Amino acid sequence: MKRLSVGIVGFGFMGRTHYGVWKKRRDARVTCVCDSNLAQITAKARGNLDVADNSALPPNVRVYADFDRMLAEERLDVADITLPTPLHAPMAIKALERGINVLCEKPMAVDAKTCDRMLAAERKSNGRLMIAQCVRYWPEYRVLREYISSGRYGKVIAADFTRFAPAPAWNRGGRSWFLDETQSGGVALDMHLHDTDEIHYLFGMPKSVTSTAHQHMDGWTDFISTTYGYPDKVVTSSSSWAMSPSFVWESGFRVVCEKAVVVANSHAPSPLVVYPEKGKPFSPKLPKASGYETEIGMFAAWIAGDANAEPVLAQSARDSVAIVDAERRSAKTGRSVRLGKSGHRMAAST
Ligand SMILES: NC(=O)c1ccc[n+]([C@@H]2O[C@H](COP(=O)([O-])OP(=O)(O)OC[C@H]3O[C@@H](n4cnc5c(N)ncnc54)[C@H](O)[C@@H]3O)[C@@H](O)[C@H]2O)c1
View 1 (tube, rainbow, N blue to C red):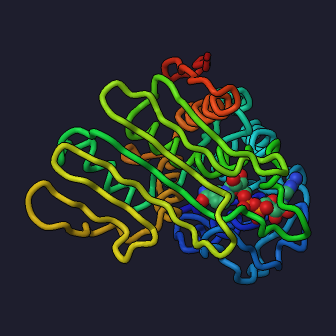
View 2: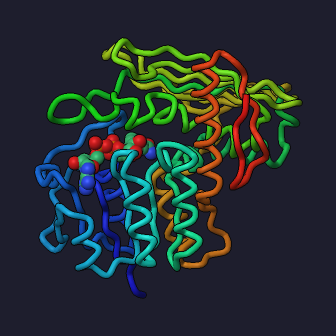
View 3: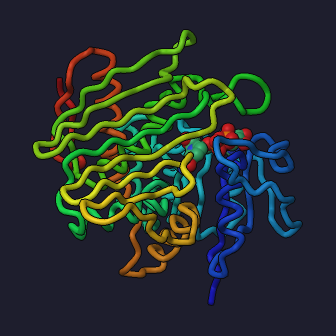
């Protein structure tokens, strides 16, 4: 079996997290990594979860400081883009132009308009583009999706998703790029997008969004709360980067169905609990693989042509960014924003 030749671009927190997953796979080999700051190759990466692989790179992994040079010198099957958000579009487009498959970290790009340029590049390319919306692959969220799509507990009446963390101030060498609203999109685009994407994935495009947000004194959004307009259910979500530094990351959901309530909470002893209409609460068995392992496995299966693979298609990830664009606009104007149908030309209007 020919192993996929994988190049990781950006060797910070997510680069090292993806590296740890790729290196366990038998169908792939990380042949090279690229980081414009070569000190990152040996630095220990830190992030909001303890998932980065901080082991030393083996000597047969080639190291580049420049992506163009890496593209010129390597024969890659996969470019795994784990760069700061503004670099996703230009670097993904360069790889797609060479016919290379791209796994690109979320958010797909800084706004939906930029995502459209990536979609256009994918259409012209022999390579495929998947966006790493990892929450779709998180064990608790996969079980929830199975309950909802099978109708096991009846229809959803209401759903609330939350994600709370201290501000991401862990980057080396001073001020983090995350705390520049123009680069990361603040908590709305960087972290809250995970739940917006999950809501979009579970329930389809909302008809509207109504958001309120808080701005940190330095100009970046540090709290957002949104109500998503669906005709038959109440759907809400809040995300915070305003928690004090001693607060431990907390994420989860409460989904009220006709015949059960399904609750996930990362702080709880059992991460997922079902409270059925009849009988006692129970904790369902969760898939063993981590969200990142399932995500990268699905990407590898998809580019290998496996019809059972469940990739995050770029169009779907683009539409999730468009919903967040509308949420940011709603928070800014204080008005609800209506959304068009899911699709390439979807536009938001107040
Ligand atoms: N899916 C998730 O759970 C998750 C979690 C955290 C971050 N992210 C996303 O992953 C992306 C990266 O975040 P991170 O936390 O790894 O950031 P990071 O700052 O830790 O790492 C980014 C790396 O890219 C390098 N870099 C910057 N410019 C470069 C260039 N021109 N060429 C090559 N390398 C360059 C930096 O030196 C750094 O090492 C962001 O878009 C972020 O939103 C996703």
